[in-house]
Length: 268
Ligand SMILES: NC(=O)c1ccc[n+]([C@@H]2O[C@H](COP(=O)([O-])OP(=O)(O)OC[C@H]3O[C@@H](n4cnc5c(N)ncnc54)[C@H](OP(=O)(O)O)[C@@H]3O)[C@@H](O)[C@H]2O)c1
Image 1 (cartoon, rainbow, N blue to C red):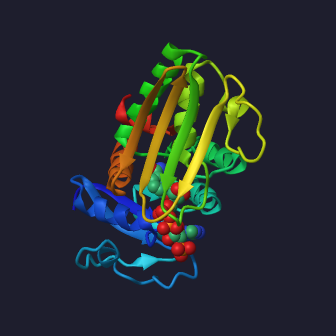
Image 2 (cartoon, rainbow, N blue to C red):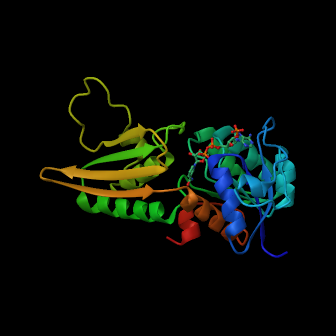
Image 3 (cartoon, helix red, strand yellow):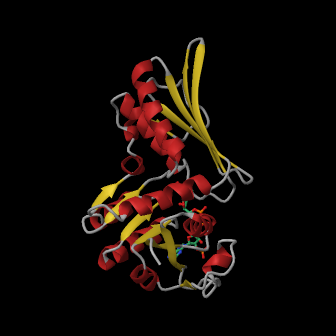
């Protein structure tokens, strides 16, 4: 059978299951393996059943190295420490890796960058076309509107999300900071509570709402005296992220080793 052979690491998760389904539904992609945490009760389950399709004959394994050996490209939407371990294994196996995990710290990111010296590695905190385009628009708006406009990033996600602000909120905040020629770390404020004093000029504020089953909503507000400009994005299901990740997987199979983002994949 033809096609790029894809393994989904962490295939029992919310994104993992949608990645299995999207791989099965995408022309040119071939689902060959899915891996799980070592003690997962889902071990041995048929990948097609996990995806909500019929049986496909391939079973979920707890052996990540075995899943990597079977594929051309692996896709990982798990958790920061698991992703860092998977990046080392993918580099050893010489297999391209697509990473969508958010909440990564500097140590984990440096492991990804090191792996990218040996393999093509695409890392992005949001795999959708819409959000990556939005980031460009925000960068331009921040540059054009200048410092008289206060920038606030508001996001809402489902009650299970474990990191805040969301990876996408940070990505959009970085775009706004870049448009102003600033480093987000120097101007971000995600901790307003109590007697805060007046808002410092140049700050980029973050507010994170959590509840229900919200897939992901982001709004970047540019507020000044007399007007407010809002640029936003709403995801109504997880398929846009899964579609972007599978697109990145097919793209990465043709690339030399390197550390890439969705902007590279989408040509933005
Ligand atoms: N970049 C994007 O576009 C994008 C979009 C949506 C979500 N995300 C991110 O993707 C990540 C996953 O999100 P989610 O909603 O799918 O979370 P989730 O449902 O909790 O899924 C995470 C999965 O990773 C598995 N896992 C943890 N450690 C593992 C290991 N060592 N080996 C194999 N599997 C392991 C977990 O298994 P157990 O359940 O057995 O622990 C779980 O099934 C989060 O960081 C989220 O923010 C990114």
